[in-house]
Image 1 (cartoon, rainbow, N blue to C red):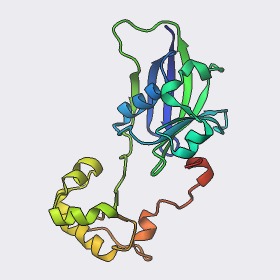
Image 2 (cartoon, rainbow, N blue to C red):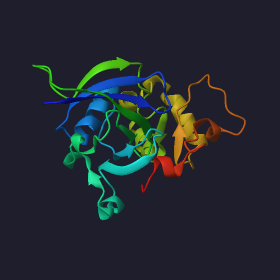
Image 3 (cartoon, rainbow, N blue to C red):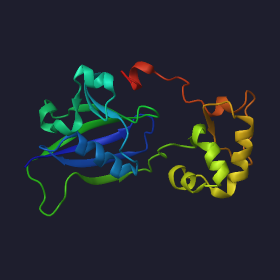
Image 4 (cartoon, rainbow, N blue to C red):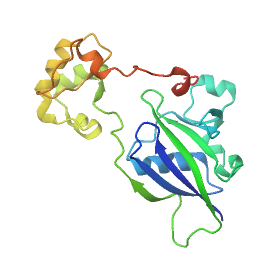
Length: 218
């Protein structure tokens, strides 16, 4: 069975790279999960691969956990499509967006086709890893969940999921008091200096955001 060796890079983090070997008869969902095995992310978020050219222009979409609009449009599902169905070029490229609500964009490029898989190896297999992937959610949390967190004093999930230090709970409460009207707020350390225009400028998600590029039909 032939293997595809893909190089996976973050669009916005040049120092992070993964190389992943995948069997030609495996699916786009297999590649999706392998990418997040290598980054440490939870893969259970709506995501899509797009057939791409050398300029990383998005073409046909192959999606995971689609919304109703994509279902109605008949967009292909990752678990139904084998990688071999879309390998027309020895350096085939795919643009990949993970988690449309808070996206990471990737460039996925076929580096080589290996004619035989190695015995005893389970595929997909991460064969090279360079650099540490950024945190899946950074230091941003959903304020809708925070009243219950304050009441129960349960900061464990912040520590586990977001890398938040439970010892900073008092600092987080201070942020909540000043930003209670915001949809999302940033977790700030005690020594952080405030921006002139408040918390919004430091933690804005939408500065320079390209809707067409990262939120197609979502």
